[in-house]
Amino acid sequence: MSRVPAILRHDLTAHILYEDGEALVVDKPGGLPLDRPRAGGEALSDHLDSLRLGFQRQPFPVHRLDQDTSGCLLLARNPKALKRFSRAFEERQVEKSYLGLIAGEIAQESGTIELSLSKISSREEGWRMIPARQGKPAITHWQRLGTKDGLTLVKFMPVTGRTHQIRVHAAEGLGAALLGDPIYGKRDGRAPRTMLHASALVMLREGKPPVAATSPLPGDFQALGFGGLYD
Image (cartoon, rainbow, N blue to C red; front, side, top):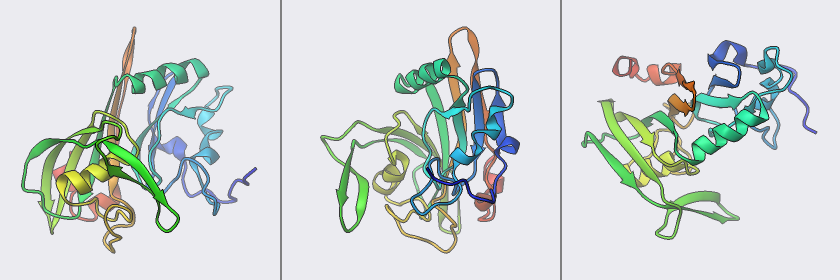
């Protein structure tokens, strides 16, 4: 069993965006993985006990965000809620919005990317997702929010939830990868991570108000001059 790091850099109880009896939405920091990496280090799993907040059970992540991706992460507070929330994701009853910084200037104002995706792997390069006719259908709506210094801030609204969907759709559908993406683009000294942020999440519930949360623009996006382009 992995040991818990002696020092935790984050306090996720201060990052709660939404809370009720069956759901939590936390503002996951960029760089924090959900599961502990092989090399060790802090992970979301280290924080689940503190996120019980008086409940007997630890909450459980309903969906996944890449280690670098910051923003809205939904957790279920009991097994029944986890089952219902997971079904809501499967049935596309969850609206998700992401903000991404593209390493290039995008001329078009908006559009829809439909590129089916498939997973490939090799011993030399590891695994990655690629567009493939026989892959799983993947659809992403997008809207340009603004450009600055050769970068473009884009709002992504994925219809499906495939692994690395937005990252591949940016690189292949828009013709320019997310800033700092080491797999589908390249590392960049301006970016401390792959610049993708889960900015909003809305999940409808029968007989109850929807789970709805919005995450503010992270500091590393603002440091590149995009604070005024997103409210």
